[in-house]
Image: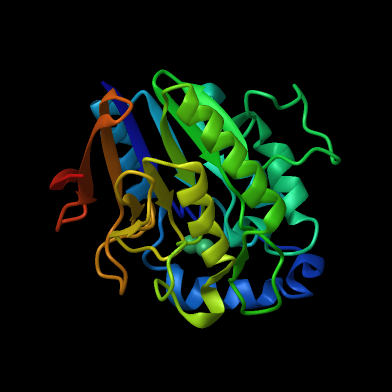
Length: 300
Ligand SMILES: [Fe+2]
Ligand SMILES: [Fe+2]
């Protein structure tokens, strides 16, 4: 039995002091968003409660599907890197980036470099370098293959869209096929929901059809995503049966916001190729916002 925990959209706060130079350019739009929509509800305490409960249920691995920071300033990346060090060893945590981790040109490189140990695939070089395509990556942990894809691009002001291109699609198919031949349970991690209509026009991912084709051509057992800050279960066409596509609320969302409160998914993976058993337990912040409890069990 392999236990995989899934959180997303940490949007780590508090908002650091920004220099005037950082406030110039498009970061100002993110700053405004934070104050209007996030300041009251995305606070560190909730994330701590979540991590306490994750520690208690003792997963074998933790998947984080993007939006770790808000504006991708150097200070935020630094704080997040320190938080990750506290959270666990890089071999036990896998990250894919979100649109907030690539907020301005250059941020994508900065976050990828800082968090590379958490995204380093089996064939990745020991140290990150600019010429190396980090994504898709493949990490094998027990009976599980984690395939990390990136949709992060620096988008125009107020846009939050993502992109899944043809190079990644080709390489992802190859990784999924190889992992399938090796008899592994394949989990694909991607920030944006690869489902039409799951998010608004300006927040959607370009390449949804390409991603669906990737899953049906390569084969997968589970897709994890974030971005919507919602607890959702969709599915994509698989090779033998439909592939569950699971989203989760923001890991920092307190009670009383428009979006559902913070939570995490805990997947129990057992069985063997062709006969996998997958059970998902969803944990959520309690009504009083003081603890985290099991609220839903799904058998796929
Ligand atoms: Fe987000
Ligand atoms: Fe996002």
